Amino acid sequence: MLELFPENNTVLSPSIPDGKIFYYPTFLSKKEADLLYAVFLETTPWQKDNITIYGKTYAQPRLTSLYGLNEKPYSYSNISMHPNPMTPILKDLLSKIENKTEHSFNAVLLNLYRDGKDSNGWHADNEKELGENPIIASISLGQERYFHLKHREIKEERFKIKLAHGSLLLMAGALQHHWLHQIPKTTRPLKQRINLTFRNIK
Image (cartoon, rainbow, N blue to C red):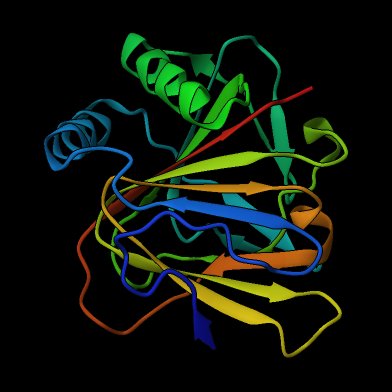
C-alpha cells in the first residue's frame, strides 16, 4: 500500500482518480494541538453507541459526540445523533478551517480512539444529509494513526496516510462516491487519539 505524504512535512494534493485529497500536516501548532486535545478529552460528552453493519449489531469501537450550528440530526449505520450546540472553542476552530479551505461547515463529529483496538471500518461519508459531493475536513489530535483509502472499483488503487497531531485532511470532489476509507485496528500499544470531522449537513 503506497503511503501518501510520507515525509509528513509538506502540503500536497496528489493526483488520484475520481476524487481530491489535501493534507496539511502542521495546520495547528503543537501548542494549539496540545491545548485542544486536552480540552476536548476532558469536556466532550462522549457517548458509546451500537452500530449495525450488514444486519449485525456491534458496540461501536470508539466514542463519539456531535456538535452543530443548528439542530439538524445526523444518521449513519442505524445511529441517529442529535447535535450539542457548537462551543466557542469549536467555532474558533471551524473559522480557522473555513479560512484555510474556503469551504463552509455547520457540524462536527468527534471520535475518541482510546487505544489500537478502537477503529473505524471501511466506509464512505456519503449519507444523503451531506449532499451530492460532500467535503469533509478532518482534524487529528493525539496519537498518530494510519488512514487507509481504497478505490471501490480499481483494486490496485490503495493508499495510506499517517495523520499527525494537529494535522488537517480535506476530502473533496467525488471522493466519497468512488473511495472507501478506514482507521484500522492495530495490536501496537497506542495512546488516545481524537478526530474531528467537520461536514455540512444539508
